Image (cartoon, rainbow, N blue to C red):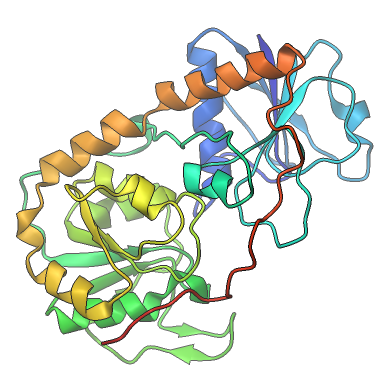
Length: 327
């Protein structure tokens, strides 16, 4: 099958790049399975296993898709495309009232259900992008992995949990002094900030971390940080919002909207097995599963089937910040 993967940013990801990382992994696995993959992506992109075309936002998308492509996989909504069969992965949380394409694919079951939809595919992790985890070594701190400037990621909640439980916290994705979302300064010296890190820096931290602290205040669509951390043997302590109840089972983490519950749970972090967390990630969130699930949806679309009978749309208005109880 000749598959075109489209995104309007550069690949490969060098720092954060959640969507960029996922489409790279997907294309790599599709190529391994014998499919011919082409990327239509931002200028400056390069890839050793697939042809790369440069996306031009000023040109009609129908003119940029090669004639010999079988199916197009968009990673953002693309109205008025009609040249080839296609589907659209939804990576974020589109707002209330926005009508999505009938061939939209969500990234978790919860994500899909919130939009009155059913088609979803979990992300799969590529272990080749990471060093082998040390599952029996000493672990001396916890970590937070997200864009800390986004208040919905709740880095302050993670800091509170770590401090109250007597643990140090390493923040990956933020700075002690931040002006991006309003002035914010964190004086707590129990917390160290690494800024926006690449895979090597991120892996070095997770390799020696006791746990991921992930008390998000929104409905997380998926959360690559979750499966990355589990891969390194780190249990997840987070809130029960969005995909988290779907991704984090009781054997690999604790979910609660209460700071005190998560704090007490973190004090007993040794009850979780680093090996079980790692095995769970490898079993449930691997590349082959992700690619196979997309291939099934590709076949549906190629057979002229719409993935949803109606255009998915957010079913209920949700508050900007979901509850976080500090008791």
